[in-house]
Structure formats: structure tokens, C-alpha cells
Length: 375
Image (cartoon, rainbow, N blue to C red; front, side):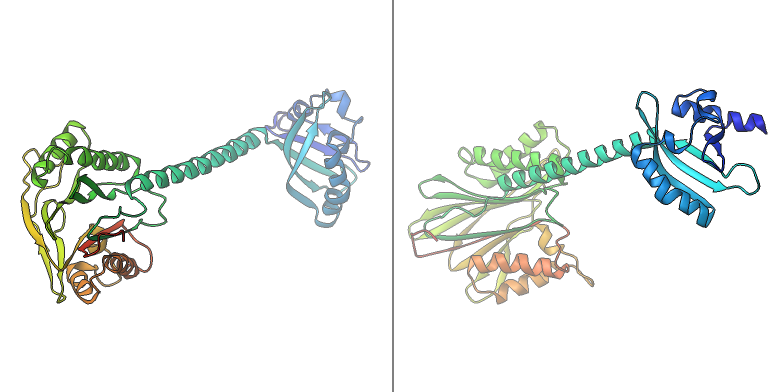
């Protein structure tokens, strides 16, 4: 038994009625860095504690031992002769008879403290990284989703965007409206597969490549072929669905040339509320070796054209998806104002999901206007 006491892997002491240590094993002596004769019969347990520990022992530990007969896992600091502190967990219970008043076991917790500090540091780093990632996602999203489309003479243009979840993960949806000639504009809306920074870099690449190609490739299908080649050369695992249209002001009206790359057709709402689809389905860019794209030509009259991402139609409610039928019916009931159209489509799709979008939602809509002033 004596050997077990001496060789115990924890600090073990017996304290007499007068508070003086009667026995102290090797581990306890190591913890306080004192020899046997410095402790046994010569020192009290309280004298080996920090100032705060001594006060706590007098005001709490001894009364608790007297009242309950035990204390468990009290955090204290033992103090060595060089004033180094050794954090320990203190456990004790009283003893009956004329021998020691109580026995105590102390377990060093420096490694635990170090682990806890490492854990706190890691948590702080993770929180800081999360904040930085969120800020980066917001900054990236702002470059992909302009705050508002530019003002186009004789054309009303409006767009809406709703990020998935809390918006902390950057998505692949984007839209763009830009001018390539005195009376020529492009309207683009796309959705890159996946999410996160990787998808965002591809989204940025696609958006800027479309802008660069649009000046030399006025035909939308031809532009999509060039974009597909560029995306394959980029050697990415992401692909992209796109709907793009070149709008040319001819006389008092607009001519639209449109092509689809794996994207839902454009929706055309006529003045009498009828909704039809425009475009020939093509393959996503960057997905297969031999893609197919087709340009269709449309004379834009008293109509509202709407492009949208699948975050609208695939918005899942409790019973079903938002779906194309519901989208067409909603569009038919709305006024032909592009600003109202994009806001209502985005809002209704989010509401269908209980107020939180599962996927990013992007909508852009435009209609001819008789007014050349900014809208």
C-alpha cells in the first residue's frame, strides 16, 4: 500500500488536524518542487497555494470539507519556490479517527490549460476566418451582382438578386448589362455550378469573358461557342448555364438576338398578359466536348422579357416546387413593369420556401420604353 501511495500518478497528501502535511508522495513533491523534509511536518497545504488559493481554502474549502466531507475538482494553483505556478484540480475528503484530518489528491492541468488555450485560440482563428470569408464572399458577390443595371435609353431594365441562406456562401448566379455600340446592348444572366470561392472565380471569369467576346462576336450562339472553348481551356470542374441576348436599336424599336446554354428559355409577357417561352435549349458551357447553341431573332414589341435562374422554379415549399406553371401564372398577373416583375418573382420564390432561399435567385427583366431619358 505504501508503494502505491508513493508511486501514484497524481499528487497525494495527508493533512493533519493542525493543517500540517503528514505525508506527501513523489508526484506531489514534484508538483511543488520541494523535498520530503520541506513538506512533511513542516508545511501546511495552504502555504503551498497562491494568495487567492489560500483565501479560497480558508473561506470555502475547509468549510465545505467540514460540512459535506468532500470537495471535487476545485481549480487551484500550487506555487513553487521560484514562484512558478502549477495549475491543478484539487479533490479531498475527510478522514475519521485520530489520524489525518483529510486526504487530498491533486492532478496537474497545465496540459489541459494549454489545450484549452489552444482551443480558444483555434476558435478565435476560426471565427476570424469565418468573418474574413464572409467579407470576401460579400465583396465577390458585389462584383458579380451589380447593385443596379445601367440606364439604357428607350429600354426599362430591372434586376433582383436573393442569396441562398444567410448570404455567407457566395453563389454562382450573376447578371450583366453592358453596351458594345451606340445602339447595341447585351443582357446576360447565368448560373455557375457549385458554390464557394472556386465557383465565384469561375463566375467572374465567365462574366468578364462574355464582355470581352461580345465586341467581336455579335451572334450570341457564336459567342457561346467561344465562351465554351475558353472555359474548357481554363481546366475547371465547373460548368455554366447562360442566357444572353444582344439588343439592337433599329428605328423606333428593338431587335433581340438570343441564345441559351443549358438555361431556361426567356419568358415573353405580351401586353394582353399571355406568357410564352423564347429560345432553343442548348448545352451548358464548359460541360461537353461538342456543345450546341442556336440563336433566335425576335422583334421586341410591347412586351416584357424576363430571364431567371433555377433558384426561382426550383424553390422548394412544403408541398411542391415553385415550378414553371406557377411562375408563368404569376408573371401573367403582374403589371408589365420590369421593376415590379423582378421584385415580385424573387419575393414570391423566397416566400414559397418559408422566407429563406435554398438556392441563389437572380432575375432580370426588360421592356421597350418610349422615353430616352434614364429610368
